[in-house]
Length: 115
Length: 110
Image (cartoon, rainbow over all chains, first blue to last red; front, side, top):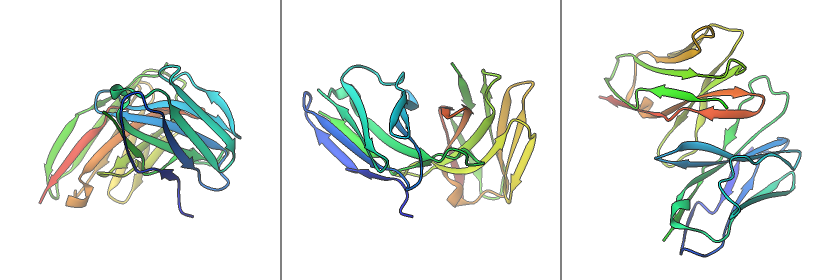
């Protein structure tokens, strides 16, 4: 298996632009998580899905952030409009319900820079 | 919600020495405690985990201990090697939500 795939790996954009981050979870995994990592706040859970349905979005910082999961193999995190304080590394992770370990498998991340 | 504190934030050891990283958590309902290693430019990767019904677990040079009463757990790395240099995160989990510590940057000097 290729693991969790994220694209793009790096994104540089200007303030006010729309940004879309993409994630392909591991095949067969029914949970998908979006995290944001910054020096100041560490790793924060933004939202997670189960069977493509958003379960908990309490970590989404504001209405400028939205996430979708149209099918089991694809999810997007959108920021519109983007602001410099959104600069961070965004990780997607997936797991399978019933796994003895509850292990979450992380993708390589998308480094977002908003100028 | 859960609050996980991790110490120290940086740790420098000589190759071959042991390293210990400590975490505390606040929610007694947390029942799963993974440790992740993050190398530069990569996503976190699970290295060891422990469930609340177990006090200690070991995997080669890595061990984790859990004290449920005191709500703290620790990562122990013995015979450290330069390739152990990375950032380590602890986490506490209930159901499917992970709450991560702030990370420990471990530097193993050759």
